[in-house]
Image (cartoon, rainbow, N blue to C red; front, side, top):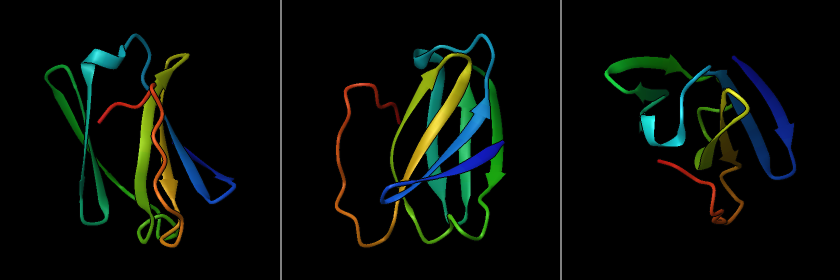
Length: 84
């Protein structure tokens, strides 16, 4: 798992080899991100720097899940590659 700063927020990347967009479901529960892939579920405790941010979108790309987080004061944007 890695976090990279981006303009207006950050991107959390989690390796998910062989997963497709249709296999992945996301939910936010407090300071945790719930990642469900097919019948498997994993709770990821968010780093303290991301806990205040909101999920702005997500995608599965090149074998990894990329979750975009927007800073609390940045308006949401939509992308056709998002999955939630």
